[in-house]
Length: 239
Image 1 (cartoon, helix red, strand yellow):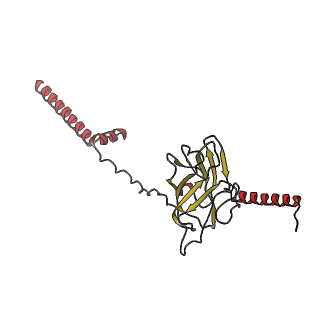
Image 2: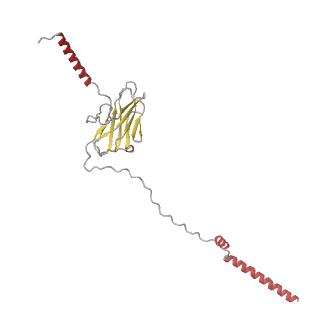
Image 3: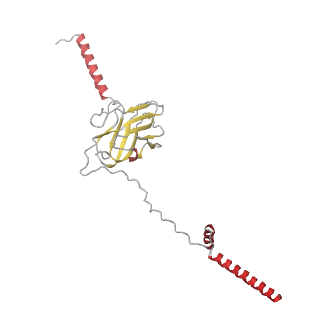
């Protein structure tokens, strides 16, 4: 078969296009956030989750990662395990944030947290906002874009696939709150023992006299009677 110059050019163009497609498909995948667990199983307890946020910027380093927790995990069940040097952990109303000094430009940011117990679910999505030192924010929040292995495409949230719960595993009850100990009913205070002053006061208020008062009056009456008798005797002698 004799090839004409035109057919040769067409063949070369086809080969070049195919080679370009191969090179493009072999290139690096779009950056995203991935999550792994030391025990990816429903209802597993004290599980360490490790997140790796790939950098998409060639101008600024990653400075923060804001995570919205999936249903079944509350912020109080999450504690910080490890992360970039100088980064700190803080709970939010619906999740947590890890942030600190910017990592080197182009480098990934990896950190890990410990979860008290994973919920009874098939997969968990951790919506993440990835911040950079220049104010840029990558939003890895889309759901339903996983490839079936926990790896997302586009702007999908990192997803953790879970195995079935172990036989007999149950949902760990929340930490019971300490209820105040019921106090015993208050006992009535004992009535104070009567004193002389209180008795006297009570007698005055009621219009009566105490025993001491009556004794004093009796003594005074005796003095008056004795004085009268004395005067009468002196008058009879004088007459």
